[in-house]
Amino acid sequence: MSKNRRILLISTILALAMMPILLRRRYRKKSIIIFFLSAIFNSVLSHILIAKNYFSQPSRYFHKYFISNILYDWLVLPLIAVLYCQATASAGAVISTSYAVALSSFQALLEYWMLIDTSLIKYNEKKWSIWHTLITLILYKVILMKGTWWFLGKLDKHFKGTIIDEVI
Image (cartoon, rainbow, N blue to C red; front, top):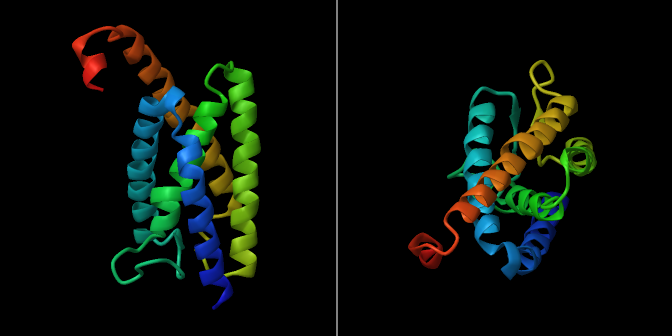
């Protein structure tokens, strides 16, 4: 088995093992919404960037059907978004942003390692760099995911005790 396939397999196993832990009871509704919103957003953004030749993902599952890495788009990144939102659920803006910078830096370092040591991702160096990845991940976590988490919390408080709360 090649190094790329081993990394994909290990990532799949780790992500599937994390799912029950991250989708625990306390934040289940918000976590599921964040998970699917993150998957959809990342998949669309990834598709656009790959189609515009910013980067490519040559080694991936179902390469005949998808131009992006569905493991990352539909499982790994959404789980990281849920982890971030749950870990910063009651944190203020400074702590949330610090956590986003730390988590995004770790993700960017892993991506940089994959860029150098594997063929899981290839950059078009005229259009994309590791700094683009880092800034995109930070903004994605702080603005989109944390903003959605906050909005869902407001909706949850507004509909508490109503028929909508019972259905969901």
